[in-house]
Length: 245
Image (cartoon, rainbow, N blue to C red; front, side):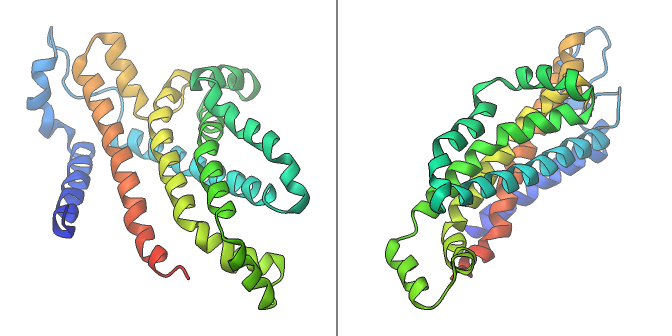
């Protein structure tokens, strides 16, 4: 794909997403064939733009927390005595992927109540593994000769980590963050089952009312958001990658 084609597709994607959220009724004609018995073609039980904003907001907040926790763990288990805790850390970050998100929500609701909080907990838990494993691979993949060269230049352990190891591990870390974003966008739709605002409301409303148009628009908006977020992070971090060293 050429650069020009990439930017064209990127612009079309964002344009389609924003247009649907701002003026959803303009797309009603495309969805009417999927309705029956006079049901509305466009979700009318809430504002789509507000729901998408809430969905995106909780995903970004969860990803920030997942990144901070996973990076701290990865750094900790690649330093001296911390290496002994690598198996335990792998087990802990893998818990979120072991249990279905619905199970995490079911456990969290009695503890923190309904709303955005249990959804945030589930997203953080679910997003740890990709970032942790990628950060671990990146940090452990730094050649020993480079570490020795940094030590020979008088770098203390903290400076070596910040100036040498993390920059070299950066591409893998960013890939882990991108994976977590995609996972979180999809998983956040389940938040509607515990009264968390998001695009999951549209899908659930469609399932309950047998309205395929609702299900389709909720699914398409969620999928488009995931793809565009993944792409946008890649574009935003590209100059950062080029200036790594």
